[in-house]
Length: 619
Image (tube, rainbow, N blue to C red; front, side):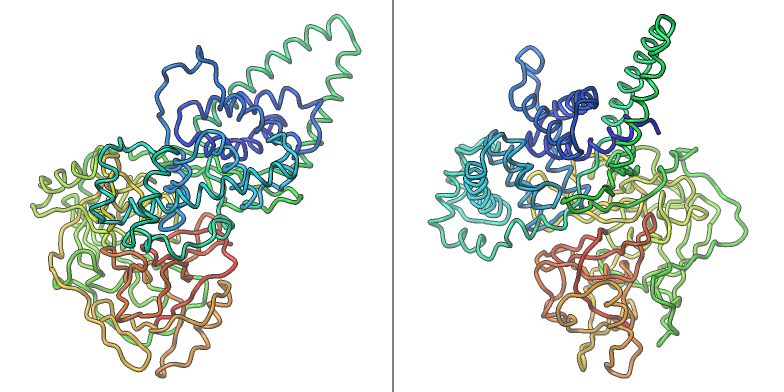
């Protein structure tokens, strides 16, 4: 890789995150980032250490972003919501989502300080870095940060009240509000929240912002921005080579100068030690994500290492397959497989509502219910474990939430009776041992590694309305999708009950009669590492059973997506914390050093390096 391109890929994630959060919503984010990075690279021979270089790039980008020329940006409407992209790509929910959106309520200058503080809390910057970018003394920087954090605390209270409060006086207070966050309306709404007992109680017990931000990763850079910077660098490189070639003809010493400059640039890149990876974005494209490996006072931003997503399906419409035998796969986990303690027949249940698993979850860690599919030869595939029948090839287009429902309701493929799958139904197809796509491609060929709709709306009726989606690049689930947005869809047939799970509770154990899983009722004491979780469950002595750490899909069967904080039956599992991650045994396929976890704050599954998480064992 050319030296300048490598350095650009190193700088982009940092500068993009600084400017993206500072601007909150605007199309000029990419432009300002690109210009600042290119200018930093043009000054490379005069630049100092890595941190000085990137701080300078951030300073130039913020200056251009906050004070753009009227000719360049006049009249341009906001097109990009960095905060929403952050929530979706980082799978944020609950207080973390609330904290991200609190930034919308800050004024322009406060958002700059907020953006820099966020990276400081992540470990990507130090306080001297903030001082350098802001051009302030230590005392002035401390004062500015303190002021902004106060405004953020107020904004969090406002966001929380607007999200869940049903207060009639709050509705009256905001009757003239146009729905656009602003510092003025922040203070007006906050005044009501402070005086209203019903609203104020919703703001009590907030987690400190530095705790919420500490384990965050940098938001991935859009592939279009990376491509634009690389293209510009290629053009500049060609221009330099042409100029040097001409100079070399006239002066033989020019070649020696060129070789010296190239050697210096290569040495600098080696010192930075950057790496990058490509992951799919919300539209199915690619996003550059930096993995910082250089030494220094900042904490590493560890991300997945993966190959580029596979290409789009070759056929848009369902096709008939004549595969003779079903493809069988089993989902692996990090602990060694243990002998089963019970045998449960394949599901085929119709008693429970679609939001619940009325069948054993395919791909269990003990190997009892290995995923198995049968091609029915009419464009449909039967899951031999759940008995759900699936559209073999996804719908030929992307749809909004309501359009997806209409598409499936009108589908005539081997018969009628199709619907958009629920969160747990679609989760049953995920194969976490694969990525790009995370599904059995023999049974479901042409599956794009992108987000697919579920029929499960987010439990919080917040405008704009959101719904659950699952990304078949790696298998994560998210409730951050706007129902007005577009995603892929694969229809399903089967189920149709209206009941809720029947749990048998006895001697510290909870048995789910539908899935056949028996759970440790109490959460293990404290939090622990992933390997500590494996050891804890292996050694657990409870009811004479053999216990293990559940897969991410097994954890998902306990999620009640009709509630939040926590999204679980508290009568069956009364000590489940409102927020916090639970370890699974499922390894993240693109980077096997990471594990999947599930947060019962609202039920999302995700992956990133965690120092510790909660544990609930299964048998």
